[in-house]
Length: 259
Image 1: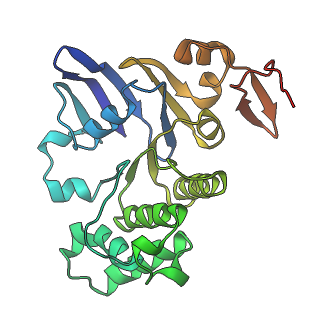
Image 2: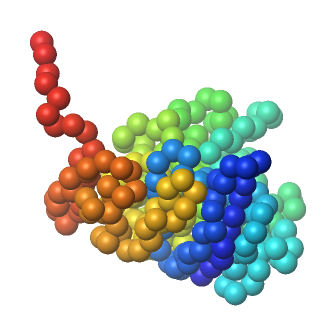
């Protein structure tokens, strides 16, 4: 379990994350949702040690992450940031192999290669594993980066807006893969999402932020309702049930159409 205790982050006089405490339950998908500027990515960055908190602590299975050695931490938590840039020319396989660095230090053994093969296959990239990243579509590239995270073979996977710039087909592919990681491999996934319908359909738990504060936290069915969503987004969002899933209708159905 990840136990977030009183995390705060300020830039100058502006509070980006304000005294947030929340527990991330194991073997579930937890989605961070909220308006732009709510502090979602900043909170995820502090949990993953990419960013130092001004105050507060993050406990990983009761161990303070501040006290963990970098290599030990990298074997427990993997993070995929919003923007990933490589200045060198890499193939998918070379990229995914980076996920084994905490174990291999760049010298892959037979077990490392086996895990790389599995991660590539899990993301349906086997046939194109020797293609270079700059030859890939947006969806293929995103799957390659997620494959690298899987190859890191951590209990906890943190993803910051992995659906950015993806079309509907590829977004669904990614969310289905994340769901499989939890259901089949027992991983714990924490994901920053803008689309509340993806959060509704695929998440077990939702953490909702607004203006740097925690406003809602609980099982998905408790958060995806019009009253809670109005508190989070300051707008009325009808929620409809279809095939056992809650869907949010956040457009204005009364807009007139001309032509």
